[in-house]
Structure formats: structure tokens, C-alpha cells
Length: 337
Ligand SMILES: C[S@@+](CC[C@H](N)C(=O)[O-])C[C@H]1O[C@@H](n2cnc3c(N)ncnc32)[C@H](O)[C@@H]1O
Image (cartoon, rainbow, N blue to C red):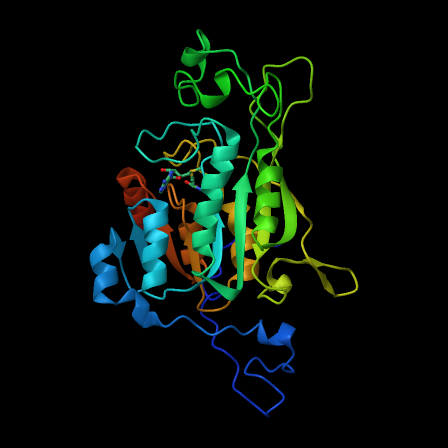
């Protein structure tokens, strides 16, 4: 893997000068694959529109933070024709946390309803993502327990336990029965395929030091998924920036298994992911001057990383405290902290 040092020029490289008719602005022959490597840039003006600045929780020349329900903010981006190059996100996982606000995602009674809700969100991402764009979704799985409310567990894991979780209730006896791994990530990916998205990878995030599972009759879970979806067959992908250098001098794409230690809430958000997790998604699928969107931005990890690497970015989160954290992070990046 290449280094994680910020390369502030990554998002700012100017396009190559245009040449002959069959050769495009990126200096390559005009095939559909090569055209996708030089997507049209979303104009800087969209960040300066009065209506956009008025609605945003925070706005500067390169960043927008929206403190809104995710669906509303995505509709707003569509209305203002703001198109992004790359979406990297980690929605609330099923039954894992109570973020403490009405309309939050993740506490639906049945996993079927959860997947339906996620699908509504990603349907709204379709018009906001460029044809050449990529969507990366981090998801982990959940077991059904059916045990009712926990008694002692609450004290041990106050951040994770919140009274009765959906999976503690009696289930339907099929998907949702005690000890069942719900296969939420798999069901979600299949639903996305059915909705027309192309599944390019089900990358596996391997956690070298997972939180121990309190079980004796199965293997301990030590992975999550980072699905890579595209809208079209031809899309922007810069394998050179994230690839593996071979002894022959050629560059192979990165592997689909990523060993990354979890961030463990270090950033004041219970479910923040580490910057390393967004490295391949952001660097490989955001062109120079591109825009990265995180529709469940939390503490702003995706935006912080994108900004350090010279990209423009947009965050959405329902919790004002998290939006505040994102703004702080962005201001720190621009002041060089
Ligand atoms: C798993 S966390 C994202 C963490 C983030 N990747 C980070 O590094 O901090 C999911 C986020 O989704 C937000 N969220 C949940 N339901 C939402 C909704 N309906 N609209 C907007 N945000 C929502 C939560 O506030 C939470 O911050």
C-alpha cells in the first residue's frame, strides 16, 4: 500500500492541454473508458450560490456541511444541480446505536425495513452522483438475539447498549431468530444490484484487533464490508495512486482485503471510521478538482481526508454536534493543523 501522507496536490492537478481530434483533453485516445478518466468538473460557483450558502450549516469556497435529514439534503443537492464525483459513507449499522433523534436510520423493527430505508437514500444519491462517479458504502452485520432487554450488559457497554434494541425483540422466526446472522450487508448489496447499481467490489475491512465477541459456539467477527458501486460500466478510477508497485515496474490495483485498525471512538463520535478506510475510495475515484460527498458524515472523517488531499467536499448529518466537529476538522485542515 502506498503512504497515507496528505498530498495536497491530488485534487488540484490541472487537466492536460487538448490536442488532436481523436485525442482527448487527458491526452488519451477517445474511447469510452478514457473519456471517463476526464470527467467534466462541477463548477466552483455551486459552492457560492446564495440559496446553497443560506441552507448550509457551514459553507466556504470548497466545503459544504448540511445539518439536515439525509433525504432532504440529497433532494436539495439535486435541485441545485450539484453533482459529485465520489460518495464515501458509513450509514448507521442495523441495531447498533441510538443517535437520539427522531428519523434516525438503524433502529427499524425489521432488517427488511432498514434495507428499504437505505435504498431510499441511495436512490436519491443517483442523480447527485456523476455518470463517471463511484459510491462506497461501509456496512457491518448484526446477529438477532431475541433475548429481551439486557440486565448487566448496559453497564459494560454504555455506548453500544440502549435498552431494548430491535434485535432483542421476538423475531419472525425466519430471518430474525436467535443466533441468526442477518446478512444485512449481503442483502443490501443485492438490493442495490436489483436497483441498477453495478457492484464492482465487496472489499473486506479486516480488523486486526476486534472488540471481543462474548460467544463460545462460533468464530469471532473481525471484518466489515466496503462495497464499491458505480452507475455505469465506464467510470473514473486512478489505480496508479492507490495501486501496488510490482518488481517489474508496473502498477497492479489494490487488493480487496484491507487490514486497518478501528478508530475506537477517538474522534468523539461513537462510530467514526479511520482515515485509512477512506484512502482507496477517495484517492482512486475522485478526479482532480473533484467533489467527495459523505451523506452520513458523523465526525467528518471522509471530508477531513478529502480536504487534506485537495478535493472539495460535502457533508450531511442530522446531529448538529457532529456537523460542528466536521467544521472544526475542516478549519484545522485549511489552517494546516
Ligand atoms: C456510522 S455514523 C458515521 C460516522 C462517520 N463515518 C465518522 O467517521 O464519524 C452514521 C451517522 O449517520 C447519522 N444519521 C443517522 N440517521 C440520519 C438521518 N436520517 N439523516 C442524517 N444523518 C443521519 C448519525 O448522526 C451518524 O453520525
